[in-house]
Length: 294
Image 1 (tube, rainbow, N blue to C red):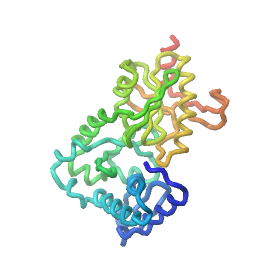
Image 2: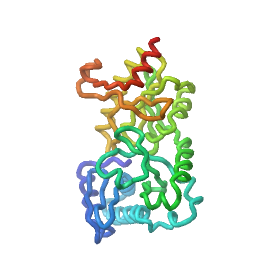
Image 3: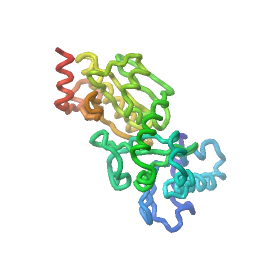
Image 4: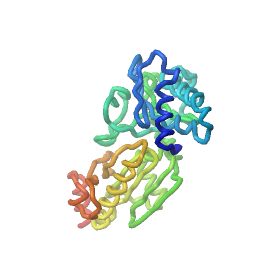
């Protein structure tokens, strides 16, 4: 997403708030996302709007903002011809996407699957300049199972743009779908590390849309180090992001595929679990550690 100065960011938010595409609607504009609260309830990120003005002269911003917002609204409110056409035409552009489970998320996406206590997985249709999160009506129209299958299959094409590693911890960055590749985590681990073994599970964090941090469990000592390091990096990236997801470290279970929160950073930089890292190990994760130590 395009980086803006504080003044540019505030000007862009004002352009969004005053855009004529919202005539007859009541909107709330946040730092990097917005809500349409009437006559329909919609929510979408402003990342595509920020990107639309990237490198453009400021006198062109009003038109660029209005055009981008119009396209997003058309997609979300069903005025887009793509969503009125055959389902087959959507499948190669369908993805799954993580969203925070807060506010009215359940109401906006009643079909969404809970993948962690604070995260939902929704369905997204990809466009060149933005991403449309499908509402319940559109999902019912085209069929949840069929869209989900296509969305999951397409996640295998989301290879990382950047990868850093230290002590068995991998930090990967990429597209706006990169964090959502946690839904195909075994494939990610094998693709990045070359090792398909996830039999003890994986420690993983998704601080923002573009990043995924993981450590495949191999031994207890390495896991103890990794949980603290991942917690600190995840919190830093979460707090610096304009589109944050979660500050938690999760344990992905090979038995359930669910993301169980096991730790989070609480401040400081002592590097000591219990001082700056709070842990809340589930019985499943504690059992995995016991098996590693054994």
